[in-house]
Image (cartoon, rainbow, N blue to C red):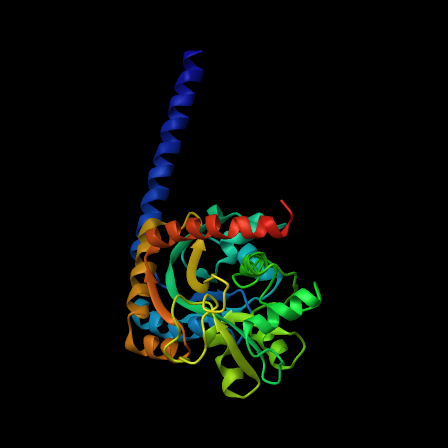
Length: 323
């Protein structure tokens, strides 16, 4: 019996020693971080605001961190393709993903996405929203759209970056407030969703002002209303949705995250680098010229914000599901 206890004690001591070595080794590795290239995955197709922010911030992160930051698009399934990929990566800070509100909302749908599997690094930007229509649309006002939807319930279509996405979910609130029924047409990302509206494949688009800007400037789309508290200074002639009788505001946002379990000091290094990059004049110029708002949040602020977004979007999604 004493021999067994002694063996257990020796074994425990050995485990503690190994644990100490592992801890020291991890600390040493963290001190040297980063020592190789970092991969930054975008969960949407190229061309949207999330892709723009990643490709704009990557070279600035390179300057801050001293290693190359490689941007890679992994679109699909409302962002869950990239999110599921990330959670299976080593939590060492070398594999990151851009994130949007879908990280907070997919848990309310039939997706195996748990926000606790990720470590938020920080925020990049916010993208105030707008409703736009094909340039030759008969809708001159939001009321025109509402009237048509009431006359044709379930037949008026809108494009979104995906079911339950940052732009699809608020449409549940829009329909409730306006007393109408619409038909959502989901795409894998903002770029193809906006392009579908520009081509006249759907009745209207709801997305970030900046994401729709190129198609508006090309004369293919026309802003119908802004989902902002006040009129957009770059588009002063376009009314807010609230002015049109529907009190609804919404903005997309883009952040960066790592797998859960990433060492705290690595998260801190990444968060500090990201905050510096977002504050860089080069980043701010590109983002502001795209009608987006550079927005910095550190890792702790981002985690709290993510929970607040889950609390806000959850009821919309559940209402859409009839819960």
